[in-house]
Image 1: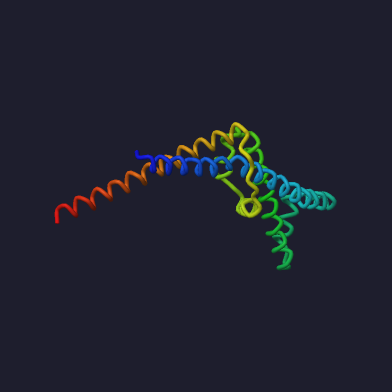
Image 2: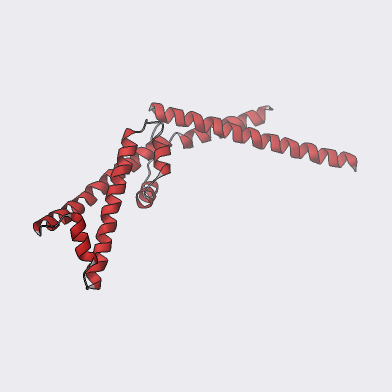
Amino acid sequence: MGPIARIFAIVAGLAGGTVFSQAPEFAQQYRQRIGGAIDELRVIVEDFNAQAAEHHLDRQQALNAYAQSSDDFLRDRGVSMRSTITRYETLLSQQLHLGTAAPVAKPFVLLGNADDVVFANTWRHFVPGVPVSFAGLVWGAIGFIGGWIVAALLGLGARQAVRTRRVHREVR
């Protein structure tokens, strides 16, 4: 590998390391947003449960009452409430998985079952952080190695193309 190729590989490695080192920070910011979403959904779900209890119904009985209504609005409201409860329970489960995962594994847990709305909002408002945690350093190293490998492979491809071009010129 020539000096220019080495410099390119180091720059690519540093770029990859910088980008990948942000994965734990993104997971942390996602986790904070998911906590906020859960807090708000909890208010709605607990209010629904309390209203159902006031009428001597459990949650499922109240949802069934909506579903059996002859009024389209009430049936649609029941579908909406069921969706809200499902999302609340899904986010709770995801929060548990993120909370119990090792710091280095949190980005993988996030990518495995991210909530589309929370993910999009986290991405839109993401603020990079300095990777001073062990997980940030590990992800930075992974990105550095990945960037270095990509640069090396591109360099090999470029060298092969130059050699092929030289051979074709010599044959003519």
